[in-house]
Length: 245
Image (cartoon, rainbow, N blue to C red; front, side):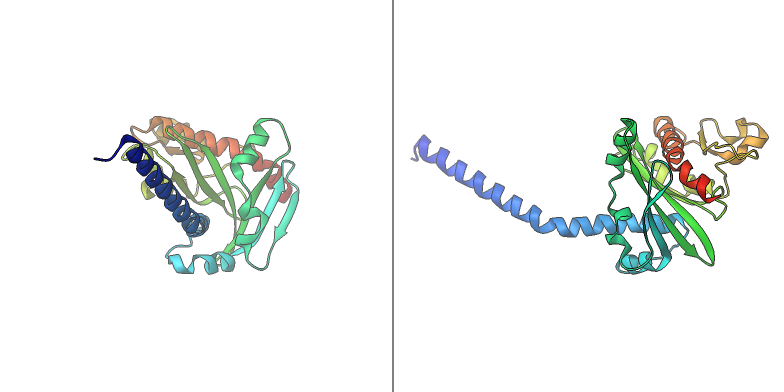
């Protein structure tokens, strides 16, 4: 019969060994996890510009091929860094932490944001990364505007923990394809963003329907989150957009 002291020491040693093994595994896996996250991020950027069919192992090369310029802009729309050559996934734009930067914005402090210029089938496309808060966690995405910096070419959205079959539907083609051809400025060149409309675009006046998409049935809170994310983050990019027009 083992004493209580022996059992306690044995259990303590096993816990320490298990913790050491888990810590080592986490350290060894971290580079692979970070690489997969980077590839997923690049894939979202390319998909928003309607560059489809990119295999995972091709993503980094295709990202550097199609992204002609990776830009960092400040809150006044001034270009802080512009990277046109080399491995753009190693540049400041790709490594910029949007959560930190949008937090600085919320505190009234100076902030910076990333922008990607892509050339696809001869068309110049501007891609603006997005970040917001959903029902159960963060939501994010990319919105791609055509050379007029008004008409939407494509969007991608992602989420951490939205409800399957409801809020999680923001990632589906049925939702994202609605955005194509919509515009973020009205006929007077006033910023409108793109509204995610509960009850459907049909309830909007005819002249506003080009600025709206149908909300997700049963996913009201997530739909509102996407709506707010689009408006709030795109407003942050307006100084840059206005300088380019």
